[in-house]
Length: 170
Image (tube, rainbow, N blue to C red; front, side, top):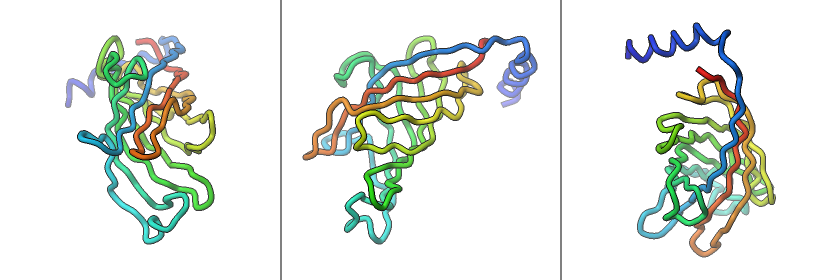
């Protein structure tokens, strides 16, 4: 812990000399709600969730695969981990609190945190980037996402994500 603290303290001390940079990331997010190996599990629901047309009050914990292409067997980028909660009584929308953990390549071990409202039936949605770790310390920016494909029978889907991130060189 002390060594990690020293490293971050040193990085923060040099922040005034660092240059802010922009990074654009593109990948696919695999939502697997059913089947042999789901990556999304219900952890709570409200007393009205089962009768709500928007699943209001349902909270899921996810650990979804991120890949280079839309196929689950394409190159792995990382994992999206966190919670999603159905938060709108009248329209299908979720409150997302997710950490995008990069497990491969030059961003391996770094995270980007996203927190916001995702109106899931809209063609294109925008979410805020509120922070990050590693290469993405003090990140901010915006995520643009859309549904690549969705199977209503299984509730499995693939989402396309593009992240526009501002962070600092070390």
